[in-house]
Amino acid sequence: MLKRTLYPLLLLAVLAACSKNESVPATSAAAPPAAAAVPAANDSMAKGEHVYKATCSLCHATGAGGSPVFGDKADWSPRIAQGKETLYGHALKGFTGAKGTMPPKGANPSLSDDDVKAAVDYMVAQIK
Ligand code: HEC
Image (cartoon, rainbow, N blue to C red; front, side, top):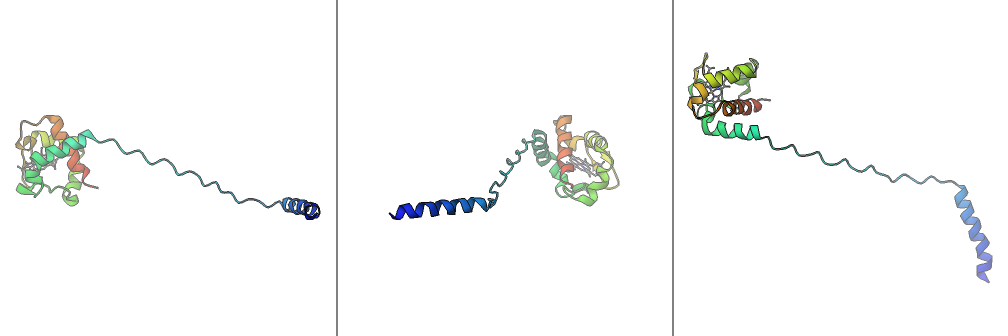
């Protein structure tokens, strides 16, 4: 009995609700973008770091002999401004400047030209 009287009322209520045309809040949160790809390990940088630590750091870690100290922006910036080719040349063939003498290949003739260039790249990369 009760059902019979309630049903039409329920129907009305449902219709009324529909006619209100309430907009449903959008729940679509954009999916977060895929994590940035991890840069591939830079082989040349790794080699440069190795060569630096084994040879160049003997002077450049402390500024021995008047060498520009590793990471010293004030000393490195004007040198970097000469251009990479000049730095490579000075590191490979040696260079006597106002502060002292950079020996050819850091006085380690067993290094290849690429080793020395990688070490220069590594040292220059520390200067931001
Ligand atoms: C025996 C010490 C010594 C070692 C070892 C050494 N350097 Fe140097 N380097 C110097 C000195 C001294 C200078 C600065 C000369 C000046 O400006 O008067 C210098 C300067 C430089 C410069 C700047 C050149 C310019 O044009 O200003 C570069 C690049 C460099 N060295 C690279 C290297 C690399 C690469 C190695 C290792 C393979 C290395 N050095 C090992 C002493 C050294």
